[in-house]
Amino acid sequence: MISKPLRYGLLITLSFIVSSTVNATNGYFAHGYGTKNKGLSGGGVALPQDAMITATNPAGLTSVGERVELGIAFFSPVRDYSATASGNNLPDTTNCNVIPGNGCPFTLGGNQTATSVDSDNELFLIPHFALNWILSPKASLGVSLYGNGGMNSDYSGSNAQHDDGSAAPAEGSLITTPGTFGAGTTGVNLEQLFVNTTYARKMTANSSWGVSLIAAYQRFEAEGLATFGGFSLDSSNLTNNGTDDSFGYGFKLGIQGEVIKGLTLAASYQSKIDMDEFDKYSGLFAEQGDFDIPATWTAGLAFKTTPKSVVTFDVQNIEYSDVPAIANPMNNLINSTTGCAAGVTARCLGGSQGAGFGWRDMTIYKLGWQWATSKDLTLRAGFSHGTQPIPDSEVVFNILAPAVIEDHLTLGFSYDISKDSELSFQFMHGFENSVTGANPLNPSQEVTITMDQNEAEVSWGWKF
Image (cartoon, rainbow, N blue to C red; front, top):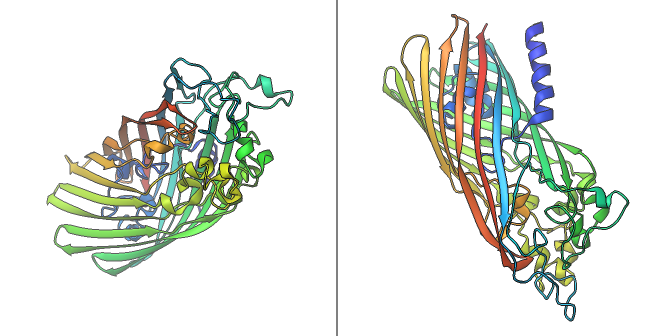
């Protein structure tokens, strides 16, 4: 039976994760899971150290002993976009229809001067929780709770002009009302919670396998997109409908083993998670509001360079291109021959091939180093690099989710408070990165999306 402190910790973690999960680092996936893992820049698939290893590699659970983890991160993403002045701001009334680019420019900012806008909400709390039981000398059972997010933005602009039911500006018209797209405050918020139940078993003294069943919950909200109502199959379920949620299930598999003394290899795979549709946003996301969670795989090694130090190297791939709502390009919407603008309804917002964010798959390389300086103190450092997933042709919709970070630097430590408990800390800096491209709704205008971020996380581990 779970003790009261553990029960309360679980409930507190669940409530915080559901209310505040935001951590856009590798696309909208976190750079790592668990404080020790994050201190190695998210590496450590082959270096299990605590019960949060189940979020990275379920096979590692047999190596960490009976313990519980409870932690919280303070995450600060700084997001903004800028748009140049446009030399083609007014529609050509002699040849103007709903097709942007055919005499019907749609200019961000609605003016002929440069625009720069910062997103509000720059501090978020992100907790995690994990627990491991030893069932036998060869088997362990664990549960962990953690989250993804980061498709979060909030660009201020009064919604007052639409409170009386008045319409947002039409495609091709000059924007004269506040907001990124002329429809008031603009932004989205995506939050994902994973409840991971893991069984792991040793094959030999130095090798193991594990499997996790994952229950996923996500919720989403969008506002300020009414201007695109003419491009939606269901404009009443396009924007400003409050929060909607969905549920789904998936699995994660993992394996690890020491192949020669001091060198451990490991790999894990998480399935694509088929989620329920967001009914309130069936006119926004492709496939009538479907927003699945992409599959990921990770492979890596841990090499003991000395008895007290270890180097880790991981490669992770996130298959964003397999989720239409994330991967479909904006061209599906605006192409005057094959897109929604040409009357191909399947490519309209909400359609089976509806426009999305245009994201590509992302591969991330993670290098970490850990050094036990004494019996009580362990230091960590890490660096990761991955090519961000947003092409320059997709900058306009990605104003909503400017997940352009490519490089992370991390530092961390663990300190043994007693023989049964430890305190861990990590700091992450995501270096500023930008993507610039032409506004496809008005190619005479250039748009730049930018992000940088910092995170500090502290956690407590208790062995029982």
